[in-house]
Image (tube, rainbow, N blue to C red):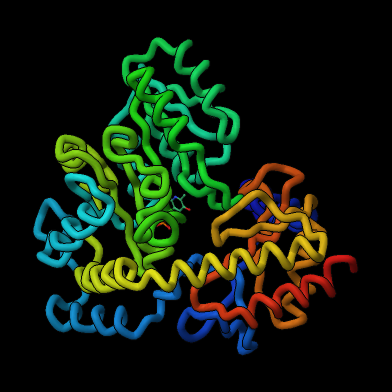
Length: 388
Ligand SMILES: *Cc1c(COP(=O)(O)O)cnc(C)c1O
């Protein structure tokens, strides 16, 4: 082994010793409350398939029809010949759904965030990000070469001070809508008001809110009644509540046309398979029409929180299907996750650097595909293992 390889091995050893080693589970079969992991059937509470659409037969059928019509690959980037009628129709339907002039599809949320932030700001500009923003947003800020300022979580007053002190020409404020590891919702009305007063842009990444919360599933911005004048840049992802794959940015036509010209992660990559766009069109139709999925999900959230409170578990202030239980150390979080698994439950332990040091947690997520009995079972098993 040369020195570089030894360093790599030492890094793995260090992570293992600190309970920070990550490994993958091999799953089989479709997404659903019951997941098969290494041949063992477990009741899962860690997927982002909040509405239970990832394995919906209608969505699967739409994808199959898409494959019959378009084949599998898109063949090229959107600006070459990869932009099919399926992509175009989905963009129009997404724009209508979120009440914005236009929407632009990206291959993933990670790429959407890199693309939009780097297109809008560069050297000499400033980006203001909530400390707990998703990694893709923080990476986008770093990649942009703008000055990156991370403000205290959900603190519009702190943002106000920083914006007041900034002399940068272009200022971009960036926040998760629903925070992915905490489940709480950004104070969007206050952030929008602050950004507007300082003539800064506001980008909201509503990966966990769209489809899932707000009137008709329109997410955090819908819930707060904020349109394009308040939140000019809205990012949504399609691999979570929508159950498929991909992402989009929505906003005014002038924003979208600029992204088409400038967003490198849009321009220099192959378009999504058109069949995935067809599947997402069907999924969007279901999101809009089947409000019972959101109602059922909200009732499961309430049931879980009431039960967890009775058991004295350390709930976080979340009204969304992301219901983390704070543990603290990475070792204990892993131990609880292992104990749950021995009793047939799959719940991920989220550890640094995904969350700040000392705040390792069980990230429990609920889905419209869960039943009340599933939630009761979760509470029963949590009660058994928590004290131990
Ligand atoms: C999951 C997530 C992303 C990344 O989306 P992908 O489509 O999975 O790449 C971006 N932002 C937030 C807030 C997320 O939770």
